Length: 292
Picture 1 (spheres, one colour):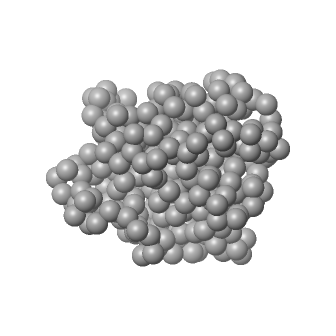
Picture 2: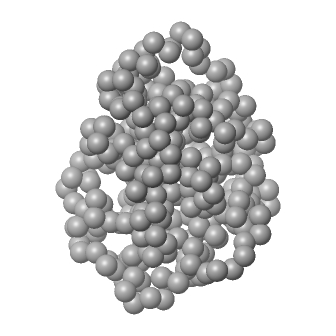
């Protein structure tokens, strides 16, 4: 990665982390979800979206194969912090941003809304916990990572890009774009190698997957690891990298995604009433402390 000095706008181009999520909701609407009218959302190509466009320019330019390896080598040692699970949620809540126009709830309340909607629909408790934990990887921002290395649609690195990834025109500025090791359809991979053998662009999905990989069933781990891989689970791309296990797990990723995107409501969950259930749930699956 270049040693250039980033300006504040280049480091954090979005006004809010939730601005990316709002853009995703607009880009991938669910037909059976009651949401804001199109007029209430900012148009994705409107100048008001310049921060999202700039976000993806940086994301696509600097998310190289080598960058991903560097971040994995650094963060997957999990030697930054260790704290009780409930203290970890307080840590995550430092990411509250008053500029979010859609909700004034903190990060924990968003996670609780996601998990409660999953629970109300009668899904197994491990999936409820997946909803509760799915954005925990955003603590990367609190360790100084720029937004484009924390959120955003994810994509494989080390192989050719897809024009189904949002703003694909910005990949031309990525050093891997013209590197013969990485710019063929398969790049460093073999056909049908399976997504478990593919390096995805770095961000909160991969980080929380690695954090939880010893504590949740495979279905939940796929939900965590690939919930931002829209080119796969919404656009059907990168089939040549998949194996049969990926194809079987796809239905679980598709099941989870609407709970993440469409569970925000202005009324906060009643934590006092819910606390006993979630304390038991966390104790059932997770250790007393989490390493970051």
